[in-house]
Image 1: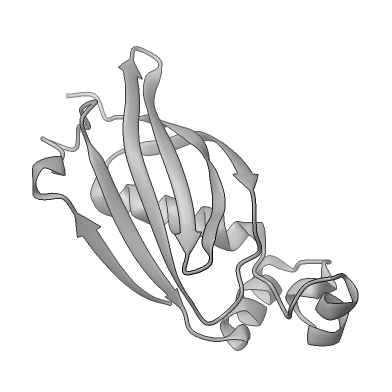
Image 2: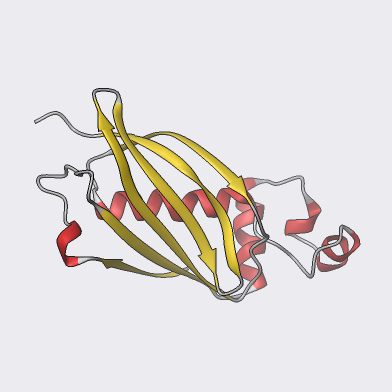
Length: 144
């Protein structure tokens, strides 16, 4: 997957730390259905809609669609590229639309709360057709 990272200049973490005004985006390209199939096979998915066009169409999809794990991997990369020393602790996502190839996927992250239990980040994952998934995740930051 070809991937690029875009950050707002004012959003750079200080010593790996995030403040409540931090937001950033991360973009990934899913070039082909073959890329989705390879990812799905690596996950050992049992959902044939990730692997076979005819099965996906029979399920009501346009074609082969990406597994949710691919969306999670984009989020994880968006976090670790922005603040490499944090630990992704929990994630709560709602999937809205399937991801088909080819696509430019953008992960938008905004810190909404920071407390002793960690940092809460609002996340939206979208492609050219709209929102694919949205939710929150919590991260733990390194001790200083």
